[in-house]
Image (tube, rainbow, N blue to C red; front, side):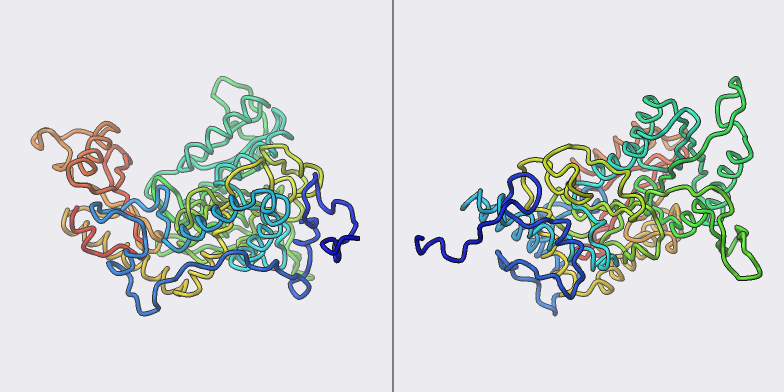
Amino acid sequence: MDSNTRGVLRKGYQGFGSFFSDDIEQLLALPQDRYVAPPPIIEDPPFPALSTPFGTEMREHFLLSPEWTFLNHGAFGASAKPMFDAAHRWRTYVESQPLRFIDRDLFPQLVKTTRDLASFIGVENDPAGLVLLPNVTTGLHAVIMSQGATLTPQDAILSLSIGYGSVKKMIGAVCEATGCKHIEVAVQVPFTDSSLLADVKRAIDDVQKHQNYSTPHEEHHSHNIRLAVFDHITSNTACLLPVRELVALCHGTSYAHTSASAEVSIESATDSSNGSVTEAHTYIPVLIDGAHALGAMELDLPSLGADYYVSNAHKWFLCPKGCAFLWAAPERRYILRAPIISHGYGSGFASQFIWDGCRDYSAALSISTAIRFWHHIGPPQMREYMHSLITQASQLLAHAWRTEPLFPASMTVAMCLVRVPDAAWLEDPGQPRSATSADAKYLQDVLHYQFRIEVPMKLINSRLYTRISAHIYNTLQDYQLL
């Protein structure tokens, strides 16, 4: 035997396909005290000094052009230099020996990243239910289409009118294919947590009482709600929703929610003899669209109780574009099918998602660097700065414009909508009229092209609002330019 072959074991393929790496299902199932991470391949780029203040000096650690005032982090994020550089280092390593990386290094490194992220979002004891994806849209598609494949004309999917546009299209595609119903709860903006919960409860109760959610000309019939989809933080209105309570409501368990203006109590079906809680109605699985959550707020998935949860890592978490995650509860994983069928199909939940063909995985691998970046600076301090700044900025604009934010600070995280004064967009202030989407686009274009300010305009209730975002590179002076 040649000396170069000593120590090489003669064993067959351990995972799926012809990849030369261990079975990822086994690696993810290992308890933390038995898991051995693969040796590090790249070194983290330098992080900002701990003495670096948030704001102007922190902006030097981003790639943002100094010629622009960037107030739209909520759209697609903005990567911090350490995570961008880490992804570049991964790309360089890949191209130095592509087969070594794809055949032998990729899966163990993705497993490590998955386990790192699992610890950051509270599922360290169940990393097998967490999969890395290119974006939230892919995760939403996987859940909605997989769940939708089991539906009939007697079934329904429930969502809110304030939900994301592409999610509505996904649900519409399922309804078109299966004949199931889309029950869209009409939500009047602005709202309170209590009024929103009451609207959702009423919709569920009406369905279960065989109320008709079809057109007035159709026959009355009931539907089984087989999936509910809610945002954690809405995109268009930038509002934090009461996710724990919404999940409890759909699962048929009890909760009481109290706000300053009203109280909603969902009575539990409790057996007084033993104190156990039983389901008050049919269990409705819940998918949470947390596209804006990771980084903007602390995430502890078990405490939310959702059946499925998706979020981006390339928005508020500051990774390069093209990385997100999907987590599914153990009893729900058997339903899910990856949108792209490849070698891992049939080999386990994580296996079917981890490989969808040869592509750039560097953004996903930068998540581990991002986690160390956040721990280096301090997640609570970063989130507190973002929330405090967005609160101050919204108050500053509302005072200067003599208008008001759409929602109070208690219902916002790192984005906020503030009403724009009519004089900013009316051709003739002496002839008031309702705003249109053309007015929103015009004003956003003016700020973009003439002032190099990137900030979106939103049309809400026939009035214009600007949606401002705040991250650790922003300062209050940025918003004064508006």
